[in-house]
Structures are given as C-alpha cells and as structure tokens.
Image 1: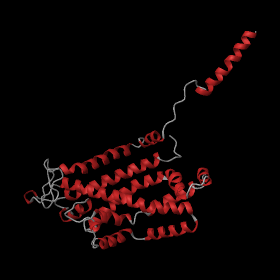
Image 2 (image 1 turned 135 degrees about the vertical axis):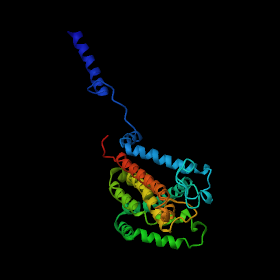
Image 3 (image 1 turned 90 degrees about the vertical axis):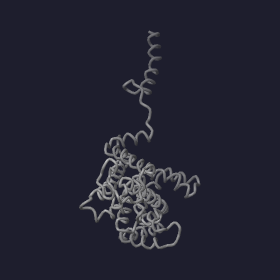
Amino acid sequence: MEIEGSSTKSSTPTSINTAELNGESGQWAPAAESMTTIIWKRFRRHPAAIVSTIVLLTLVLGVILVSFSPYDPEASDMANRLQSPTWQHPMGTDQLGRDLLTRVLYGGRISLAVAMMVVVITLLVGMPIGAVAGYFGGSIDNLLMRITDVALTLPTLLVLILLSAIMREIELPLFEKNSVVTIALVIGLLSWMTVSRLLRASYLSIRELEFVEAAQAMGASNIRIMSRHILPNALSPIIVQSTLALGYAIMLESGLSFLGFGIQPPTPSWGNLLSNAQQHMTRHPWLAIFPGLMIFVAVISINYIGDALRDALDPYKVL
C-alpha cells in the first residue's frame, strides 16, 4: 500500500507539468508567429492584391529597363508616323513616328517618379502637423486643425493649375518648366491633409495609454515619446494612406499634364501623351488607348494593394 501511494504521488506532478506544457490535447503548442508573418498571411488572402503587386512590379521593372530600348523617345521618324501596332512597334507609333511603347514607358517613369515624390512631400508636411496636434491637443490642436480644414476646402484642381502656372515661371534651377520637382511640390502641397488628420486621430488615442504615461513618468522628452513610443504604433493607417495617395497623385499629375499645366512635351508623361492623342483619337485610337490603359492599370493595382494592406495591418482583424 505504501509503495502504491508513493508511486501515485510521484506521478501526479509529472502529469500536471505535461498538461501545462502541452495543453489538453497532449500536443506541443506552435511557436508564436511574428508580426510580419501575420501580415503576409492576411495580405495573401486577397488574390487581386497579389496579382496587382505582380503587375505593378512588372510595370516598375519596365520603366527602369526602358533605357535599353532601341528607340529614342524624342527622335522623330516621319517615314514611320502613325503606324498601327506591329511586332516591331507593339503599341504603334505617334504623329512624329516615335515608338509609342518606348514613350509610354518613359512617361511611366516620369509619372511614377512624380507620384512617389508627392507621397514623400505629403508625409513630410502632414505627419509633423498631425503628430503635434494629436499629442499636445488644446489650442495647438485647434489652430493646426483649422489650418487643415481651410486647406481641405480649397478646390484642388483649380489651385493646382494656378500654383503650377506660377511656379513654372520662377527662374530657379529646381523649378524649370518641365521639372518633375515642380509638379511634385505643387501636388504635395495640396495633398497632406488626410495624412495629418489620420495621424492626429491615432495620437489622440495612443497618448492616453499606460506605456505613454510610464514614459512621461520616467522623464522622457516629448519628442522622444512622439517619435519612439507613439509613432511606431500609429503607422498602420499612414502606410495604407500612402499607397492610396500614390494612385491619387498619378491621377492628379496626369490631369495636370493633360490640361497642359504639368510635364511639358517633348518630355513624355502619361497625361501629355493622352493630350497629344486628342486630335488623332478617331482614326488612330491606339495613341490614347495605351497611355490611358497604363494609368488605369497603375492606379487600380495600387488601390487593390492599399485595400489588402488595410486588412493586413488591422490590429483587430482575426486571422
């Protein structure tokens, strides 16, 4: 009896430890997944976003490698003007005999460069305003948000046209008539408000959490708390907004160039390629179809990626 009792006592702790380690099923629990793995699992649930990523990367690769094209994007070849698409010229030629595929890819380089610069300018202007307004609150918040509200009420396209016309006349190296920097700066100055409001909302909620109060109690400076403690937890909506702003900037740049206030010929961009195709659209529709198709493909791909990132970065979404 004593032997049976002693064996029972010695086996009990072993079974308890096994249950604690392995769970009720008796199997080892899987290791915790990293945040990157979780985001990727959520992102790949969107087939349209996966396809859009491949399409966008292919487009970016094309605009990078277009430098190896055998055709000059600005050199005229009147003997081959207005040719329909062929194996030699997959998108045909324009009214001056230039290969349209080469010009479309060069135009994509300009349009995508403008869009990326717009996003950078938007973040550089909008994030500090939103962070300061959300963290300090009070009168500072009221002042900065009223400025933001005024900027939101401006008619975007009309102000863009006015600013573009003014800045093109400024005689400075960075603000030449065909300067990508000029167009990006003009669009960026009127595109920062959404980023500012999003970041302000995030800062208003995060600044009340315990870890921020702990950092304040330990004597951390406001700049350190804003940049090292709050900002990393507020980046998810900014990342999503940045992808959507990329597509919006492509549309704005194309619209400005189409109206003649953006990138000027002979430098190609998707907008001025569409503008140059107006008088030939009925008899030579490929001149407008292919630049318009590039705008459509780029913008819709970026929007699908943005939608997938919004779900992937949502902290309340269940796997």
